[in-house]
Image 1 (cartoon, helix red, strand yellow):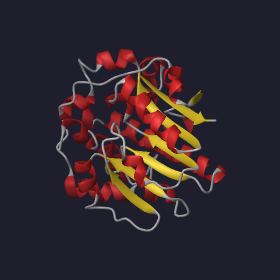
Image 2: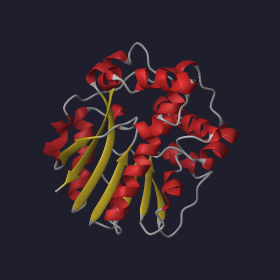
Image 3: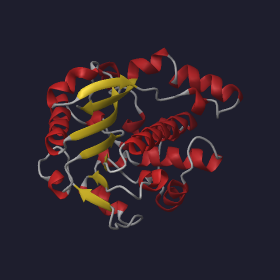
Image 4: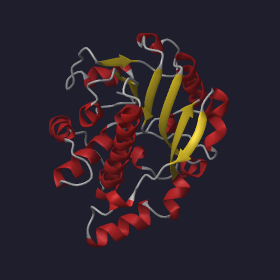
Length: 261
């Protein structure tokens, strides 16, 4: 498994950690998988603060997706960079076609823990290459989540992926987290992903930079809303809010919503 693909264990650990504590995210699947295949994390990648952040990020994506599916009951769900995430089970979108997409070696690992059915499929692909969308026949409306993906794509690669989605579907709703360019530069010095061998990441400062690809920036979303940070207690809440919910965090990490109109 490549260094980039090994990063899937960092959010898996975080989701397992908060789920065991009974806060933020209920993810028994993450608990089970982590207990069976735990990757040896080092340094900051195994900190409780990052685990809280990973759990909150996943929960924000889940809640956004649930909201979109309530408004678009026939939409196709595409989870790009699914890793070993159990979003398809947490959200419970049995009425929708759902496609989990990741590199072939990741999907091979994923098939140890998940099974396809009539409405759920896994696609092995490098999303930067054309062709993988041909496995999705529906072309009306896609709700797309790209969690922990954009920072491994150049601006040109990201625009290409978005343009493919916009050409394939009549309507697209997209939620995507991004590093800022400052965060990308800082990552060369210190970042939890360095602990699994990743040294090259990318950032964007202007969310409208990908609009030429056929999609429109709608709004910036909160990655650490009070309804989730309030589930921490005492000094943990104070410290977390100052480090991961304060102005410094905004300089590093953003969450953007887009829509093809």
